Image (cartoon, rainbow, N blue to C red; front, top):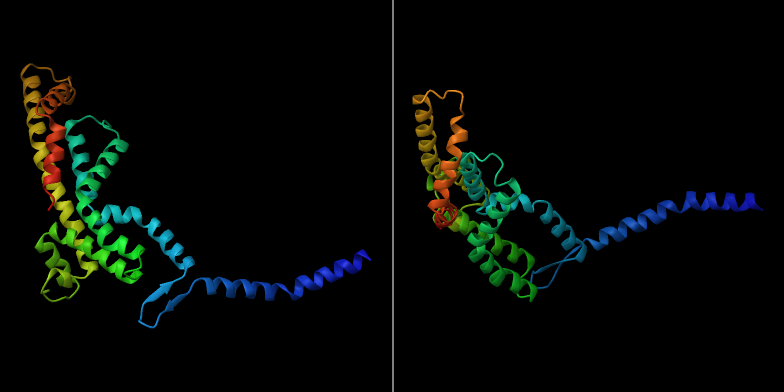
Length: 250
């Protein structure tokens, strides 16, 4: 009797797996659907929206790095720490936190506009998902173009064999993004150079004094560190740096 049940179980396992797997596959594909209404608006299924959301979360760090003010701010902060000669003080976590908060502050007008003109109308059903994505990317593109040098835009346009554009709205996103990042790198190093100069002067003065006194074995960087910290504190360096850095964005 037990052998008969075993044989029946094996037969069911051999016959029905294909049917079960086919049903699961068809159900899975039916869950990821895009339906189009009579007026041409497309409606995406919940599974497809969740898939898009999870994909967006994976590329979110790259978007923060490449499409916002984070790149310029974190580079300037890193150069400032190196100019002070404080090694790992402030630590990397603090620099990243300051850069993120300053990025949110700089990007607040753009984010608020996206929230009012894109997110709220999409939630209320006034615009479709395609329109929301286009409008949101358009706001980010406006911010990037305002803070991008024309020569960088022209360089990437010529590399893509594109003609001159009549307006900024006609510039493709794949040209704006690399041009913006290249421009941000150049601006960040220019600001870092200006920040480095006064601390470099202090290092040179301290090194000259030590050489004149014959103290060759004493590290000039070690002696110059408290003087650089004192100068930075007396001029309220963090407030000046943050204010000037935020003021460089349009």
